[in-house]
Length: 348
Image (cartoon, rainbow, N blue to C red; front, side, top):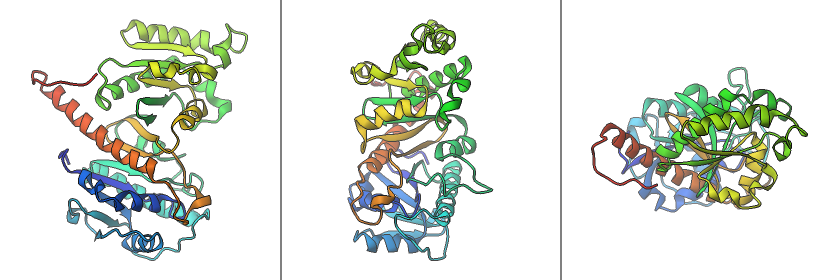
């Protein structure tokens, strides 16, 4: 699919006992969403009918067993299974994990085959999805194996963009993962994504330090002096606008992050705690660096409120809008790259 006027958005249903179904329905109950894209939810018509009734939403959906039968401008539901599902909101259930993975695998296949343009994933439970055939920590790792490119967890909220050197890695193992090669690779992915996905021609990137106070010249670890600083110096000498390492404890509180197009954190919580503090409910998890586009909301299954009809769909909406925007930006970038003499303007 290459029609930027009618983008096909595939949606994996996530954990059925969580809030995924609710936020999907609430998003598309506003019919203006259907003017932006054609959604296809990978689940079953029986599940969506139950959710539609339970949450008192008024979605009219087109149930299909073949993606060729999807209707543009309609809410399509692709039947990944036929049996009825016993949904118990708020309960952790390995059976729900099986359905979540069935949905994700079908949606990913459609993405790889070009039947959908982008993928938006509803939240999963990282414990219940584990099985003999699926043993990935989450969406990002699975998609990294299925798609081409080098993946990057890229958290996005308006002009705040936080990438990670390492994502789902135990804290005790972080320092062993940080190498000059990893730093160079991740910064390269961030630069490329900022250019083609966010239309920033000359990106300015900040990198956070590995240790508290970036090691205090070896007093609190020597990794920043031995690995981070020389690597960043080398990258900067190549022409990239890369700065750091910055002490992570004061970087966001001082508003220094506003001076950069992206920030690269060393590990998961170093980047996601400040990101979610600043943008929770409006943030998007974008998997950068791959040949296909995937986004998701910045929250989890929220079992504690599942089924109550009070879930906020704002982050899911942002994930939808971000996927559409990135698809359009990337399509334009590829068009200009293929036709370098073509006249036109690109935002910096």
